[in-house]
Length: 75
Length: 365
Image (tube, rainbow over all chains, first blue to last red):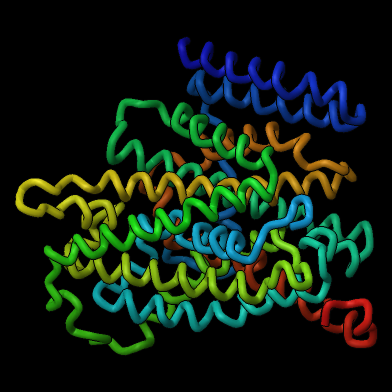
């Protein structure tokens, strides 16, 4: 719970310190990309802190590399 | 110095700190045991032509970074597709180094601290550094580099009190062939990772010489890495070195002079933290700059924060544990990085040379 509060505080800090000035000074497209990526990262952070198991790109990349380079010993 | 540019000295500092980044503590090439010094020398020979290619690409298109060069060579659409690959590589590498950091700190000093907290602490510093701009990164690296150099050399010299030179023998007992695979791994991590710096640097006539920066950075970084690896073998021995996750930390922890000057492994921790911050910041810079290029944003600083937070997310989920991290680093990474470190830079260089062949006035040539 404490970690979630800490995480939210950090995100709120960046919303006040960074997102609002971005809204005022940059184009709307920049603002909406920022909001989308920021919201996505906040959701993922919450899921991590709630111990939800999220897929990692390491496993598919390992399978791809193993397949391409025929690294059968690493399987 | 033009706005947003860095000097040669600062560029060398960034290149050295980037090269030794996480490598100085993780001990690449350590599986070759007492022949690690030969492995590193072979890998430096392998990396030298590619360092030339990275510097040459920037020199052919003055005052342009990698993404602007891609647009110059391939037009709008194809350049953005290639840029996405480099963005992914910079983003992924930044997350890997962030995770290396947090695993190191968890293992050696703060086992009870949750990893997301450690990752966030480092990530926030990197956000600050990247948002300040390239010139601040350069100035900070320029101040940090001589201090770190003194600290690294001091801890290596002090470690020599515990050194046993018999640990370096026998030399190449199994020949050169077994060393070549490990040399390729060392080429891949950390030398060829300097392809990321093509997203930071740009050739500026009489102000920023990419050859000088790249070669000096590569050479100094390589020598430091060589000294640290040899120190690990001399102090710990070949067998103990490969058993340890962080042999540099262990090698320095045994230093004890007159029972007074001891527990200097904190120096290794601080060096790792500071060099790693430069490496992660460079990756974050590259990823943010690339994304701004793809989305046609004028200012990359506007999206540094969300990119950094996503990088922190990836760092949290990328590996299940330390063992998986080392398995990926030792076995998979050297193959995975081939397209980003070898194939794409080669293609870009060849296209750049062809384009500049008939247009020598327009290219840096």
